[in-house]
Image (cartoon, rainbow over all chains, first blue to last red; front, side, top):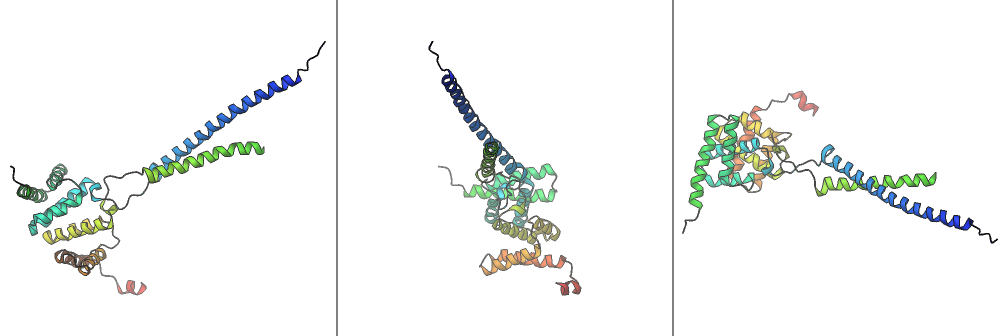
Length: 144
Length: 125
């Protein structure tokens, strides 16, 4: 009887199983590697955003808190009371960003009223607001 | 054993790469944007403008207490020196005389409110 040596068959079978295992192992190594990157990335973002965020210096006035902006408008109003220079007041109010000066002053008055600013301070800002309204009407080109 | 160590090393490498990428994103590409900032975080040039308006407001109301409180918001170590220096720089650079004068008068008013240092303190310096 012809005896077949099955050992090579078994060896080949085991070897192919090993390659299969190796392929699965390689894939799972890549998955684990990418997962490690993702976890590292998450830790980095959490650290960079919450634990040790970039310290903000050199900010623009438009980013100031509303009470600081309101006080700035009040300062401009106080200065305006003395010098009566509307154009200069407009220039100073431009410091607070892109909104038109009457809007800036209106917002400051609204905030001041909510927070109980003194009548004297509110009155100064309202005077400036009235003057700005006239100033802007004069500056606008006539219709037609 | 050596194989196992090498096997774990790739995970450490992955975490490190992820950390670097995460920090790059959080600090450079998409850093936290602050709103509602105080005046002491303003850029120097904006602080100068802010200081000038404080001086102009002081000219109007002569309220040194209020002016001091406003100047302190800018976070200067020495508010008197900051105002005086700005006045001098403005004069030297040919800036608005009114603005320079307002700053100068504010600096003078501030110096009157400052405590006089004792001779001992001066010698120790």
